Length: 169
Image 1: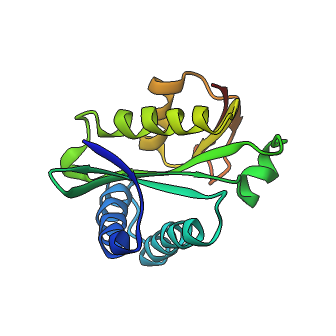
Image 2: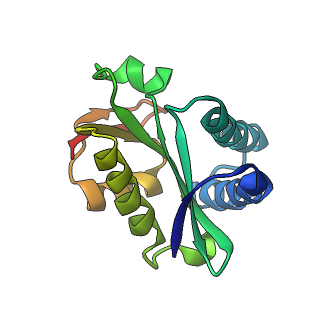
């Protein structure tokens, strides 16, 4: 696999990956909501656009045999995260972690995450934040990062929690 920073030529493929991943995720989570689908795809595409405008926001891709298989971003913590925790200035949020359904459970997510941690180290960062609202994402991050730093019970409705990790590197 290859880990690289997104370029303008990758934007269309990234949008297609987001659409594929989001459709799969929402189906697995039991959502049949076109508005949520479009909002999430728009949010992801905005993160890509911000990475071209703001040097503090970095968006990366994983490729296998020239095929885009996943994404991850290091970005300044967003308003939602800031409303949940006291964010240390100058630290990053690990976000936009998506792996094409055909490549899930084959190490692509770990590959993205390990390379993102290397990037954080090279930037001299000591802490990162990560949050998850979808239950399948929460299960992945619970296995990878352990218990969350914060559990917001019923954040998305009864029995639908939101988890936040604050981790030292």
